[in-house]
Length: 412
Ligand code: SF4
Image 1 (cartoon, rainbow, N blue to C red):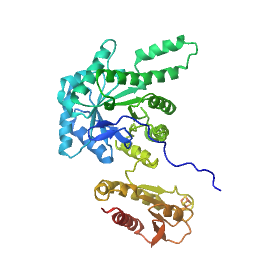
Image 2: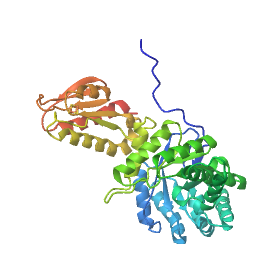
Image 3: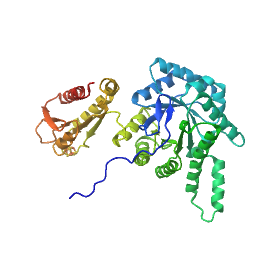
Image 4: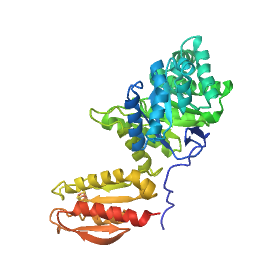
């Protein structure tokens, strides 16, 4: 007899307050939301609006922008206007540090145009002014009916709070290591600030929390604690994740563990773009992380074998690339004309060893001829062989078959 086999899938999502951010609901068991951030100068209205549109088209469901000066704050309503003219309907989040209380007071149009304010409790202000400046930010959120993200960050930890905890720890009978104390300072900074905001009058369903660090194990530990100690919606992200594959791997490793445990309501993959790399790479990575974990579907995913000595050309890798690009390009249209097509599964395989088997598991798959095999490429749909392609036009014909499959299966 078969042993008791475990169920597939992530643990149930942790129950959190649902927060309305513009037209997007975050938390409360809703699908995990993808967000990103621009790297333009916010005073460049056209450049910023264009990049927001680009991120939104790539699938970012919320976009954050820097609001650091009066000029940047004045640009925000113009950016919102420009986006409306472009039919880009995405919540814009203002990222404030040091002077957010002044900017939201001085430029009411900015306070109104933003869908959410991001406040870093370590960068709200210093000394005695800190509490009043934080209170002003929260009062502005209440006045304009906006949610806030209270986003503590390892790189801007509240030093006064960290010192208090360090002193307490040093005086205790069983002192913890310094790293644990600093993690606790980060968690407390986020939670204490959230409860202060609630005391001032901001409802709990208008608060999202984050506490970002740059180490994978630290991030997992911090968020497990945040999720245990509160019901606030949580924004996940590894800060300063790094360049290229390092940033992708580190972010995916940390976020996947938390998402698997049902922790996290919105995610951002903070990648440092490589020269020439588009800002949208971080959106695609976030989507692929959620999709490969089976948490959401955004774009059909191609299963492709890595290739080996049984394939003497790079044709099948090129075909896999072409197919992935094709379905990614088609998705904005399919989302409207063929809803459900994002669930399509595809396989492009290099030879007969695993090709037919893997292709049968996909909705539509192709097994290309490896070295020494007959120059034929059987295509499988819904587990059955339907046609065999031959010759120079295999790639174009396979792409056509994909379009026809989507047409048949997901036409409304
Ligand atoms: Fe190699 Fe064939 Fe396996 Fe692809 S399917 S990795 S070509 S043996």
